[in-house]
Image 1 (cartoon, rainbow over the protein chains, first blue to last red):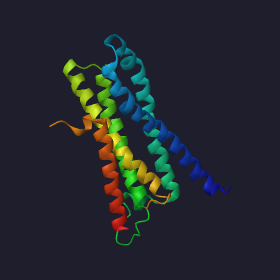
Image 2 (cartoon, each protein chain N blue to C red):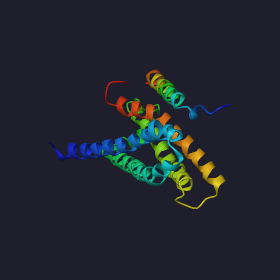
Image 3 (cartoon, one colour):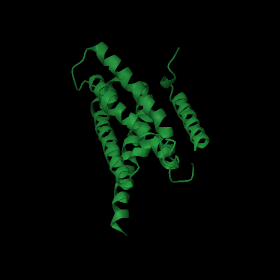
Length: 169
Length: 30
């Protein structure tokens, strides 16, 4: 295999496994943990809040970081950065990179949500940083709604990522 | 009014709706 093909493939593979780590844990939070919390007896809740959630959040946010870093490197190898930023919509463009453009924008919004909204608010909600009871409640609400927003966005994001080179465009 | 994002089912449904909107947009403008 030529090295010029190998390097983009290596980063595509790393991008996919990082993305599975990230979106897998996003869906764990939204499809499993959050709906299960009301069914767990109060005395057992600390096992989730103090042990499982902080560990899951660690791999979740660093999975998100690894996904965007490997994605940017991959886009650099493939030379389509200028086109994807504008969704390949310019009059001189043939729109061939529009799906990956949408996918990258959706993924970037989701990465921003993880690092600048979900994680800072989860730190308050889980007691990792000091916060009053009211601040904790508000932080949990913001983190929860943003996590749901990311779950919503993950559906078209994965469609666009796959659509670019698998026949759906 | 209750936030639709409080419902997991509505969240997933809206995700599919947004996917359809983007897919149709891409087909129309390409």
